[in-house]
Every structure is written in structure tokens, then in C-alpha cells.
Length: 202
Image 1 (cartoon, rainbow, N blue to C red):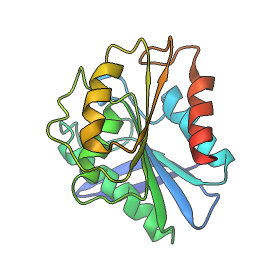
Image 2: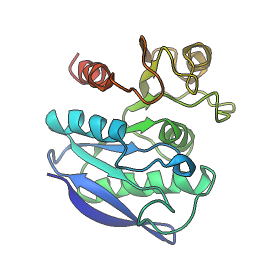
Image 3: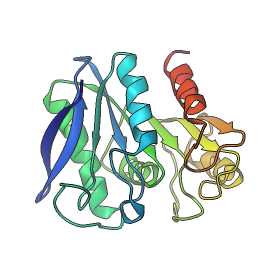
């Protein structure tokens, strides 16, 4: 069962939901764009958390600064990287050493920026990286990136744009396209869950 938690990122206190399962492996899951209503209660974020939790991982999802009861304000992906770093540090403070990072939409972008800097997740998963909405810049050598998933009808995270870009991120990452799915995975969440579970249980 998830419990409400609070932790600090720089000068800001953030809120999150933690489900303790494993003392050894954990995952931080980040949410869609705050300016478009994204938060930790998003159905895709929650679904990803359920899969990891069901497979025995300790899970943590949280609200970026300025979202819900998290203090601060939207920071164009810059301060949000600090939020990710603080979330990972929180799990490390619980003694968890192996920590994965999963991001959906805006969260995938923030995670990628963070992983290209100070944050070093064991493995990283991107769900619908919003390349048609946000400039991913010159990201490269994301060795931790293992899985990318998008929908075949996703005009915010177009498969063709991702296919070109991930060769620079990590050409060894697995790339899955869910035929017929849009950016919000309406009616397709079960297929997304199956892909994530298959990735975790090869």
C-alpha cells in the first residue's frame, strides 16, 4: 500500500507516494507536463507503478515543484531535474541501492536531462517522450536507457522522431510501438503494462 511522504529538493518540500516492497530495488516514476494538468495521479504513471509494485519493487511517484501540494513553481525542466535527484536520494536514504527511473511524457524528458547530468539510474524507461512538443537537444550516450514505448497514433511523441533520436541516446535500447495508441493510451493501458512487465521479466 502506498503511503504519503514528503521530501526536500533544494529549498522546496515536495509530496510523493511511496510503496515499500523491496529493500534492494526501487523505481522513481515521473509525471506528464505540469502546465497541462500532469501530476503523480496520472493514470499512466499509476499503471506503471502498479506493475513495478506487483513485481516486488519499492515504488515512488511524486509531484514536481509547483504541482499539487509540492512547493515552488514550474521551472521549465531545470529545477525539476533537482526534484528527480532528490527523489532518488530519498530512496537511497532508505538503503535502496539499485534504483530505476521511469518517465512518462514530460517526465521522460526531465529524466533524460537528469540522467545526462548528475543522476545515474541503474536503468531508465521512457514512455512517450514528447519530442514534437519539447526540444530534446543534443542528448546522447544515455547508457542507462533500456526501453522506450510510444503509441502509433501519438502526435506528441511520434514514433519516427523517436526512432531517429534514440540511435544517439542508446541504440541498444528496446523500442516498442503500440499500434493504435495515442499519447494518453486510452483503451491501451493494458498493452503498455504488458510491455513493461515483459521488459522487467524477460
